[in-house]
Image (cartoon, rainbow, N blue to C red):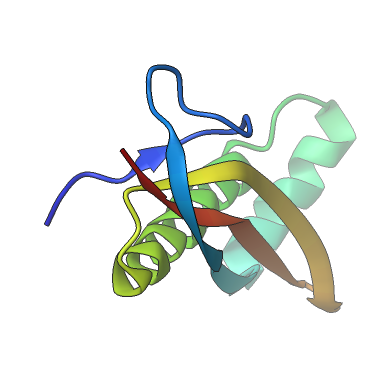
Length: 107
């Protein structure tokens, strides 16, 4: 398959959008675990970055982006423009990360 161009802008330099295919989206819901929570509680006392949560968020963003790209490929897209990421709490201790954008064909 062709590599999908991902852009946070509404255009791809040097290319023309010839067709809008629809919204491409990908999401993941992740929950914290007790081991991370205990360590996070200790970090909260002494301060500093909670690296376990940083890694969890990075992995979650990557998975959501990969799922968005797969959705765009299923639509036959060459690119995804206006890409955005959002997060929301689904329940106590679990959050969804959503990646979305407009799947387009380019010339």
